[in-house]
Image (cartoon, helix red, strand yellow):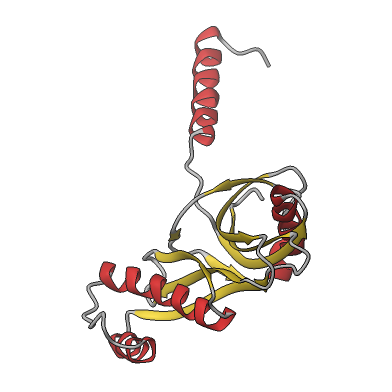
Length: 209
């Protein structure tokens, strides 16, 4: 069926307008998974690459972002998340990393997560890296950072001098923060002086990933 020139122009304008809208839709993650890794090599950059491989995300072109957990976003397992990524894809990640070539030096890197009870609100992702802290200590501190950022956003009253356990009780009673957690990687510097790199990451996945 032949279209009149006027109908053709209107149809083309409508189509191109919708395509422009699609192209300019902002990226908002629908799913996030947490991962971590460690790598050792005589070159620092190569040790970072090996840490990415250990974390399962080395095949992506990574763009670093911070530090918001989007509203209505689902936290999924690492195993589920790795199934959704494709080699060569541009991937938005919150990454914490640390490196050393000093033998026996303890390093750590972590990502903290704090989620509000109201899923239509955004949460927080925090980054922390340290020297001389165990994985547990660094992880708890990273988690505390995320929770504090969310608490101040939600106007939860708390004493910053309280211990982390005491703060968690305040958050629980407030009913505004439903979940906190962390993913943290620690390692001891290689005894032969190789570069040792640790990283932790929150990997953001959109509709089309």
